[in-house]
Length: 160
Length: 395
Image 1 (tube, rainbow over the protein chains, first blue to last red):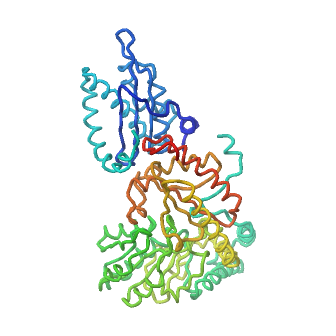
Image 2: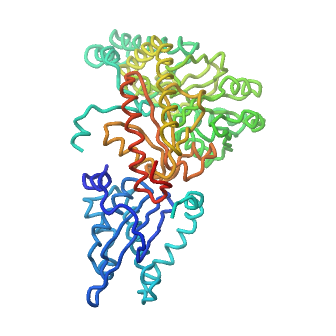
Image 3: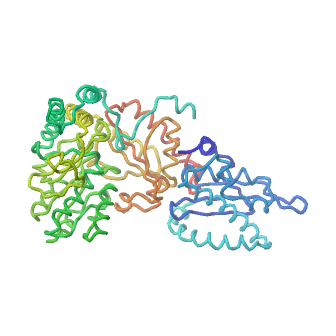
């Protein structure tokens, strides 16, 4: 059911892990299946542009969730914030040579994680936030609160 | 990935289906090419085919301690279970309209029950405890005057729990309600005596016992009123029309014969392997838990969960090492829902996620088990290293 590309990303995930002192962190989850995705980004200024210089991920979820989060990190590394926000679920699915229909939501989750990481960076640095991103953020937060409750116990035990 | 495909696979999904035994194939073949008569025909070839199906019926009747005339062949366990619920409901609606099924039944029982609920019947779900045992005290209270049928599986397909069938049978007999059991996972693995257990209807399937797919049975105690599901030419004594799938039924009978022959030894051998796996997994891997009961479980079922990870990812990691297991995680389910069995046992949704089922069988060797036990901790460690919920580095 999975393409070779998906399995490749799953078995050899790129940009796996955590960035200490990340400039932005996106933590999102899918209420339906219970997946959780964390994206950490580092931002560097190049002239007037702000570039995503480093990005890492951690995922609690299935093969597709791991593959899509790994794929998005590769796609946005070195891109400007504006370019990164342009990436949609279709781009991720294409880069993986397709996803089973029931797993499409995993690619949505990856774009949401990225949006949240960027939102986090913009918010922390008191930078203007695009309206569409602001709206996306509101939707995501609602779902996350419900998931946070589910995994509360595990989160509390986490080592900082 | 190439390696995984060419390497010998280790099949640990016997609860899903089994390979057909070579002796079974051999017994079936003549009924495709030489003795292909329609068992409903009264010419010689028809009679020959009918006799072959009846021989299988006899093997089954002997095993279940019932009459030959009480065994009806169907195409699948799903059909047998649909037939039971819908057929009993339709034929007994003058007596009452309540049906009780356990909360951990297979989807084909649950969804048949839900269908009946949409069509005017009252359906209630008998709760289970943390191990998956039906609460018999509660069940007794649930059976009221308007109850016509209780359907509780002999053993659970996911967590392997063997239900207190004798006690449930006794309760149903006392209360005067029909008792059906879906025995797909137990059939051929342990003795089942429908008289001793007071079972009125029983479902079993061929492909779970090294027989072909497409053959199953419903035992119906003489005198039980049931409407047919399939109407037609009146096969199976008017109860189940359809040209009888003689070759598959011959295979089913042969498969059961072989299971009976090795039952005692195999049960012992598989139980030993099962216990070795459970013990080693729980010892070697931190934050791992057993689902179901440690002892009162199928000899071939191991169902374990690992915190902080999701089952499908672990299943696919094992797949790349040549090991085939199954998972009931929400991610792997077509409805993206956690296992109704684990939830009914009170397992929290987050814990239900990291569950895999390992089911062994006739061709499982100790060497395969040892390889699995060697590979599993590393596979769990790898998937945990991807998860943000990783507790420590030293898993």
